Length: 98
Length: 243
Image (cartoon, rainbow over the protein chains, first blue to last red):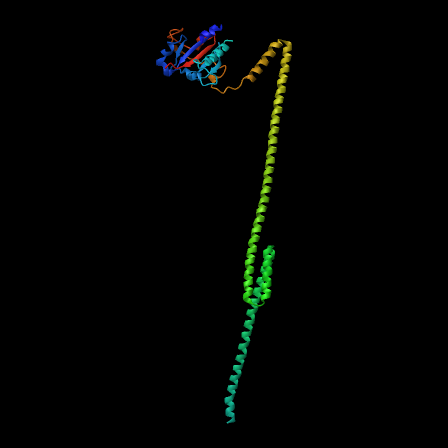
């Protein structure tokens, strides 16, 4: 995803927040990606602060304001393994760079 | 000897005379009692027939009127037979009862009709109430109209302010002021109400948290920080579970 954005002449940050319940398996993520992976904890509960669920996407502008909320159960396909889902997320990310 | 017979015959004559008197009185009492009973019976039957006939005529029922005519004919044709008169009277009573029942039914029907009429009146009253409601609604509408007028007054006041601003604009940098006012108004009208949780509404700032970054392949591994570190570029935040 990051490579595709760079290919388009844009740049973005991509970060992952791992679920509290999956803390012991965080390496399953860090072993396969180079993006920052934050481990959520009960004391913070970042998922609840963001009001999101598993596999949801949020896109913030460069000032930290929300510009897109893409839930996994939403109308837009966001499953990255599928070409359509990947393209949907990529398009939203490129739109955020304008 | 002749005087002795006289003294013996005198009491016999008196005795005979007394017997004759007693016999005469007894036959007169019997005749009077029999005629009185007949009169009483006749009066009773006549009175009953007359009462029944009036009652049936008052009933106004055609069947009851025919029964009354039959009763009258039977009574007249039968003559002085008390037993038949009594039977006729009983029949008349029965007919009258039927007529009364019919009459009562009719009356009940009339009452129902009257009730229906009353209901109609009630309905009319209800209609009146509805009319009043309409009037109330009209009053409410008038109130709304008043409110609208008030709004219009407010608009007029706003217009006045705008005119004042125009005066101010004429004196100073008018274009910038006008543009700013217009932009503020249009932005307020364009934003739809967000029904989602506040953190998910457009324009919501990201939450302030600090978590440990676990990926050694990325910057800041092993340290805790938040999203503020990524300001300056759009940020895609993905929520995953690494199990």
